[in-house]
Length: 103
Ligand SMILES: [Zn+2]
Image (cartoon, rainbow, N blue to C red; front, top):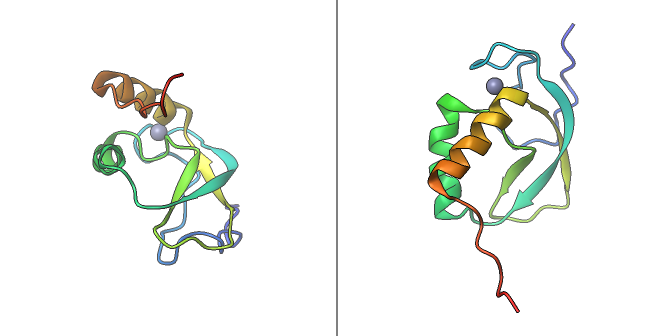
């Protein structure tokens, strides 16, 4: 039995989250995820494009959009294989977020 209906905190119009990763066909871990607001960076847009087909459930946070809302967390799922694939991809493109001024 699927645990759905507790996803009301998610972005409007978002599709329900499957229990099985559509890419890796494995059971995903249920998680309460942070909602991150703000305009995604160029690297994040690129990641979203790639992630759709290669690691759709590799992030442990949601992008909440540009408008900051009071909601800070939302139910979600994370796929271990997606996390692996995402980590490998991030390494391959060296998309490490720039550090704010080293002392
Ligand atoms: Zn996956």
